Amino acid sequence: MIEFIVIILIDIGLVLIALFLLKKITLQNKVFKQVLTCLLSFLLFHLTYVLFCKLLFAENNWVEDSAPFGLIYGPFLYLLISSVRSKSFSRKRMIAHLSPFVLFLIVLIFFFAFGVDSTSHLAEMYMTVLYALVPVSLVSYSLWGLILIHFMEKIKGALYLFLMYFVLLSSVLSFYFFNIILSYDKLISDSSVSFNHGGMMMYSFLAFALVFLLIYLLQKLPGSHDIQRDEKERPPLLRTDVEEKKKETPSYNNTCLSDDILVAYEQKLDEYMEAHSPWKDQDLKLGRLAENLNMQRHHLTQVLNVRKKKNFNYYINEMRVNHVCKLMQNKKEGVSVEDVGYMSGFNSKSTYYRWFREIKQMTPAQYYELTKEEV
Image 1 (cartoon, rainbow, N blue to C red):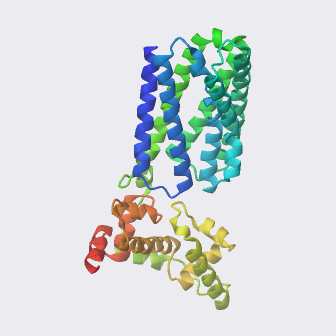
Image 2 (image 1 turned 90 degrees about the horizontal axis):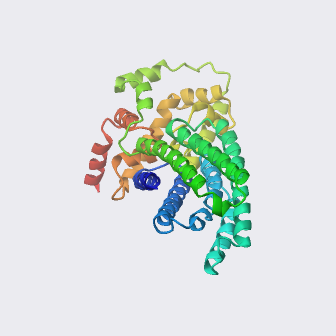
Image 3 (image 1 turned 180 degrees about the horizontal axis):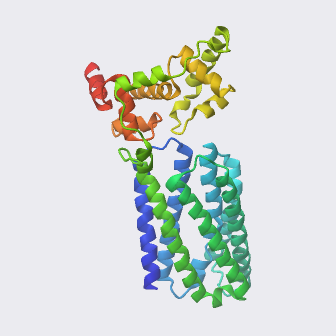
C-alpha cells in the first residue's frame, strides 16, 4: 500500500510540474496547448481521487474501482494527436468521443447518491459493462493513434516519444482490463489484489510518459535550446556571409517563366503571406509553401531569386524578424523578448538572435530598448 501511495504522489508531482511549465511556454499550436492542459488537469483530479480513496476507503474497492476513468484517456489521445495534426477539431466530434465517459459518470453519481451497494446486482452489471468497454475503447484509440502518428511527419523528438508512450500505455492497460474480465466472475469482491498490482504497473508507466512530456516542455521554455537542432545548426553567420550566400543563389535570368508570369506569381506569394502568415510555422519548408501556393517548387525558387533577390531561408527569416519588430512595439508585460521570437516562428534562441542581428544589425533586446526610447 505504501509503495502504491508513493507512486501516486510522484505522478501528482510530475503533473504539477508539467502544468507549471505549460503556463510558462508559448506554443504555436494553441489548440494542442488547450487539450494538453485539459488532459493534465483531469489527470491531476484522477490521481487525487485515487489517493483520496486509498487513504480513506482502503477497505472499500467499490469507490475507487467503479470510477470510469479508463473511458477518458482514449478520447484524450485522439484529441491530442488531432490537434497536432490539424491544429483544430470539431466540438461536436469531441463531445461524441467523450460521451461514454460522461454517461458512466452520471450513472455512478446516481449510485452514490442513492446508496447503491457494491454487492448489488446493479453494481455488478455496471462493473461488468464498464470493464468490458474500457479495453475495447483503449485498443481502438491506440490503433487509431498509431496510424495517425505514422503518417505525421511533423511529430518528432520528445513529443513523438510522449505520444507513442501514451499509445503503449493505453495498449498495456487494455490487456490488463481484458485479464480482469477473463479471470474474475466477481469484479468487486475478488479483484482487490489484482487491482493493486495492476495499479502499480499502470501508474509506473504513467510516470515514464510524464517524464517524456516534461522533456518536451523544457525544450519549449523561452531561452532554452533544442540540443539536437543546435548541434545541426551552422555557426552564426556574419552579415558578409549572408550577402555571399545570397550571391551564391543560382541566377534565373534565363528562366523559362516570362516576366508577366513571375510578376503574377510574386503577387500571389505576397497575398498568401499577408493573409496566412505561414512563416509563423517553425517547420515551414520550401516544398510545403510551394504546395500551399499550388506552385511548382522550382518556380517558387525562381520567383524568390528573380523578383525578391533572396533565397528561401533569408526571405522567410526576414519576414519573421519584421514580425518581431511589430510585436515589440506593443509588447505586453510578462512577455519576454525571447517569447516574441518564438511567437514569430523561430525554433530556437540562437537562430532567432543570429537572423535578427544579421537583418537589423543589433540584438532583439537592443531593438526593444530603442523602441521604448522612441515611444
